[in-house]
Length: 110
Image 1 (cartoon, one colour):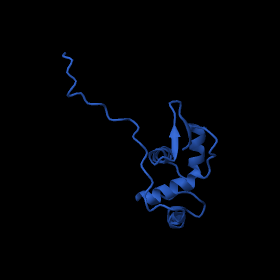
Image 2 (cartoon, helix red, strand yellow):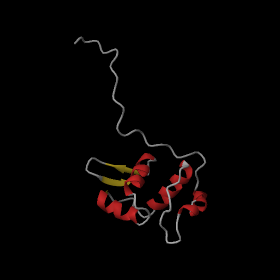
Image 3 (cartoon, rainbow, N blue to C red):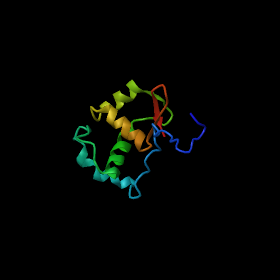
Image 4 (cartoon, rainbow, N blue to C red):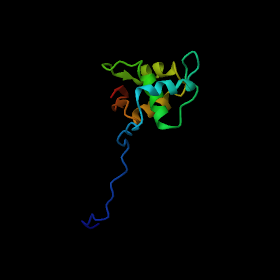
């Protein structure tokens, strides 16, 4: 093997930078997300459009304390009050920069 690294490619990062909040997002978005929640507060479906998805995720994140690091099991219990697919909600929250995670499966608000 030669010392020529001209064709060396770095691997794709496992955790890319969080997606930025959409430019049209604002607090009034909560008025538009009512259609995604049942009267009991549970989530009917995860919105496809990013602005509405972020509004839904921020609504769920209101149950989290900004000073607490949550073990995955505890975070799942909070998310499960809204939706059964806790893994999808967690992934979306990380993707949009609402949550951060360490290597020990502790989560906290960004």
